[in-house]
Image (cartoon, rainbow, N blue to C red; front, side, top):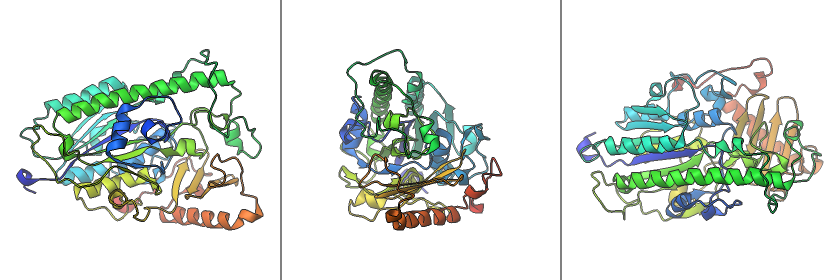
Length: 435
């Protein structure tokens, strides 16, 4: 392609770590954290209100975003070294496709996949665990990049660690007025799967207040740095020629079911994540040498089911790059363009590696299967708090059969080694075309 006439957009993907779907004020937050930068993106873009991660833990979720594959396909079904080796650099990634198509590719921030980032298709890469430095390094890259003369489009992933640092909350701090908003708090453990029940804690509301307040502070910290990042990106001339995508790797329980943090379960608190896709903001003026066509997409909300497995196909379509047939996800652009478009999925799926757990979720039902033989089934339309396990209810047998069948087909189509994980700690069987 003649770079002098290259009108393909830049793409900026910003990720946070362990951020729930309901933490952004503009989208109806359950928290008091103020999120002006995230609100800006929500008010400028298209927010997907029912987006789910393919694994509610860091490394697998991030491997899926980068590869466009499910964690078991990408060779990262569990966290790095717990028990997974570093992600194999022979695996084709989103960034390999972008670089082959003439894009410059960059990464700054939390990585958590092992190996050298440069081996995964990045021209510029820096693994950083300090969010302030992540924002500074990304901005310095934009300022040092000779954007006045550079016609080459850019794919840039910026990955913040927070609000993950809420693990360091002060257990002796208290909030005497705090009360959790969850209907599923203080409801007992009857019917809960043993793995989830084992994660419950017997904290009073004052201690939950300390936990939640610190979580909110981490969200505000991430939002403040996001605001600085966006300001630098704007002043480097990128707003009129960039799609900006904001999401998280997975969520946090935040006291639902009396559970903190994350763990071996598939509740919406850990599997449902924010996703906002922002078109080029062409009204912004200033010196920009690579303006792109205004897509004419108004801000809005989308209720269709989606997954972060869809990010790779979406970004490939935005760049005009052919989508590999082996990718299991779907581009979200039809839904971005048209709020009435067909949902990319009727059912979304998620994995947990050790012990092996699989989830299938539709808008109305959630089905969870454990390799040990346990099952969960929730009617989300009637029981959004996931309190009543209907897996053994004869009246729900039809719904259970439908959801179990969807999961069976998914396991077969992705060659998920779920049934073999009782005998083997680690199995990697990627699509042949992905190597």
